[in-house]
Amino acid sequence: MRTKTRSAPTASATSRLIGVDATRGIAVLGMMAVHALYIVGSDGDPTWWYSIVSGRSAATFAVLAGVGIAFTTRREQVPRARWRPVTASLAARALAVGVLGLALGYTDSDIAAVILPFYAVLFLLAIPLVFLSTRLLVITGAAVALLVPVLSHLFRDALPEPRFANPSYGYLLDDPLGMLSELAVTGVYPALPWVTYLCAGLAIGRLRLSSTTVDAWLLAGGAALAAAASALSGLLLGPLGGFDRLVAVDGRAVVEGALQFGEPGTTPTTSWWWLAVDARHSSTPLDLLHTTGFAAALLGALLLLTNASRLTAVARILVAPLTAVGALTLTVYSAHIVFLNSPLDRFGAVSGYLVQVAVAVAFAMAWRRFVGRGPLEWAVTWLARHASALASRPRG
Image (cartoon, rainbow, N blue to C red):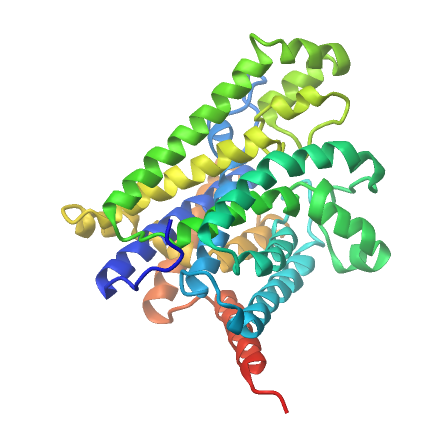
């Protein structure tokens, strides 16, 4: 796999970005749905939409973070000569996202678990990754998916108990080590195992995404990986007896609840068989591989749709709302968190979600049309560019 690619023509590059932004739009709308809609049906089972978007939306969001970082690093392995400006840029992005995320941390975690502080840690973890070749990125991502959950299972009981409250400045001052542990390992979106998503996104971002052949392989390969991970989990838990062994240790209600509704970022450490589940937000090897495959397949599908020559014009019109939201994800996501915790949210679950989607789409399309880059996106990019410029200045 090549680590360097030539820049695509302007039209192709635009189409590529449309597909990426559209995928990002789906991811953020999916995360909004998890926060806003009911997750339990009248029969006590997960609602159909929750079964589809929960876990997969956040994972897609993280994979696309890697794709975005690949774009900002010229879609190639960063040479050592550029380590200072690239490091400064990523650190500045992490700082900006972290500052915003900790400010949003004073909102109610029972309403919505804020992902941005975890996202900020991912930006920091991306710094050494951008200097790796694409081959090493793939190897690193696979190793993280397989080994980090095992190490977490071994040592997690020795770490501070997670609060499962949104990380905030108060939490940082009160218990900095505990918050770091939660952001990295024990929280809802644990950054260390999520390096899998980052590696996948960086590797994908270096591909020639304007090629429909690449897009088709991305769709097919991602779907195959997601299906294989789920099939292996089913085999381990079913015919090989993993489910029964978990029930014997933790009880049927606990095990069935985890498999149906997912876990809060990690699984219990009572049995090694927990690593065989692919439950949403469980951060097990099979969960990480399944959701990585899903994200790759979804991105491949949207890229294929927007890059295919016979469909491009129509596809751009169809995905324009998603593309607009995807280009303003940080702004839309932050506004969504604030709205859910404000007196303005007096709607029912479905009506409230539809109102948020309608407002987000209308605002994003208007802002993109008349202004351009989103307000929060502009602030983060400005800070990153200035940090990079300062780091590029010669010493002395």
